[in-house]
Picture 1 (spheres, rainbow, N blue to C red):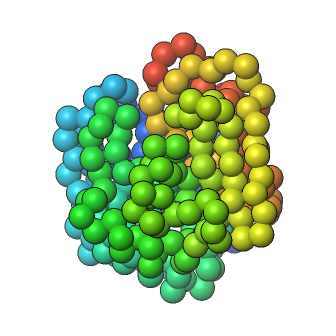
Picture 2 (tube, one colour):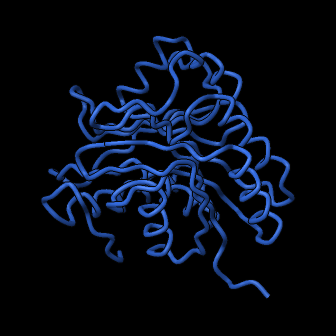
Length: 248
């Protein structure tokens, strides 16, 4: 008999300092009292301010792990983190879509680390356009959003290929303002905190908090709003680049 907690899955990289990737995701899952599962896409060597190496896990091993978990657990929502290219990402999504539980899928579009280490192969970025309609949400920061716009993958003046949460952390014109683009509406999600401290892995924490809220049955707007509130508490948990996950 399953526990009353909904199952959620993180498919992301391993960060040994625990600020980003699956460790950050699982910490977020636990604070929200859901049952967290994880599959590692890459083994990284990094600290809170520098990525030294990234060793990608073979896609065959990842798919085997995902299939095993989906066969045993009714996963309600999935967060996907770093992936090396579009084909890798596409295969992961195909397996998720074949699941009987039909989980909601959020891709945290990490194209580069904050230290400018590239994760995603930019040579096949156009193939992402075919993948996005199969996702429930992507969460690009301002720089990623502008890049995807320049590649004609996203256009804020046209219908988005999926729900898009434009994060406001890198914005100069409206710092901290997140914008949620849904099929029919655009929502501004304003910050509550007047000042926050930057954190390593903040995007991972935000996307995994959204996944949790979706698994708990919240609307996309409410899930993103509540996740932002959790994120602000996380950002202000310490003045350093590594934060603490406190109950809220």
